[in-house]
Image 1 (cartoon, rainbow, N blue to C red):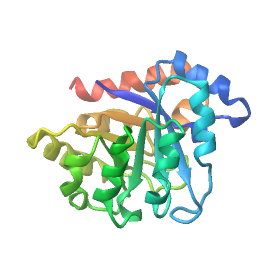
Image 2 (spheres, one colour):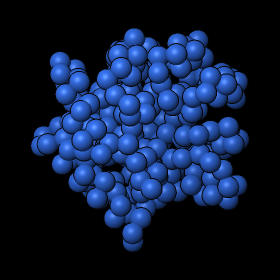
Image 3 (cartoon, rainbow, N blue to C red):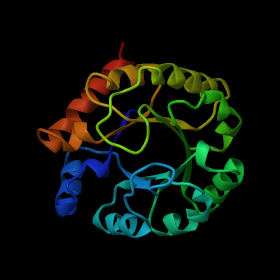
Image 4 (cartoon, rainbow, N blue to C red):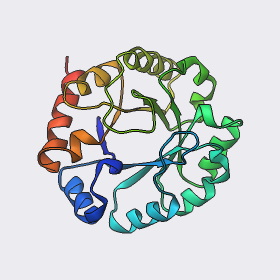
Length: 222
């Protein structure tokens, strides 16, 4: 089953409640929240208080992506804010295994993200601890970037390892996802598609989600 995760970073925060309602009506499976610290990535977005506010607005699962240095210092705060999944970057944390076990101990799904230049084998030894592997198909920190084709091979490798070892981890892809790239990543083995501009950009949010899902499903029907 392919899941669609609208990225709230691309939504209009002046009417966030309405944007979330549109995503719900369009059949979104979860909401993706990008947390940036101005250190690991250049931009700054928000922290646990905004996640907590979003939690009060929806029953959809909240997929919190920590693009921050030393994420281990903030895991409890984001778990308490209402996150259903917390994903940290392998490049930003010294003790990945310890952080993943910490997340799981809070009752929240544990994820690790890979930047485009990071080879997938750096993550292989942690796959058994993961609920989600997030493949960044653009350089993190900015919306509206162009999809990097090299991400497809990375997804294939991760999916092969997960299937060979019969692991539970799901592959999520974030960056440059729209109707043309969606079938490429689902054919390669992705389970969850994060999209910002393709959903909250031009057009109707509900229709955009449905269109993206239709194209994503074409990748697994071939």
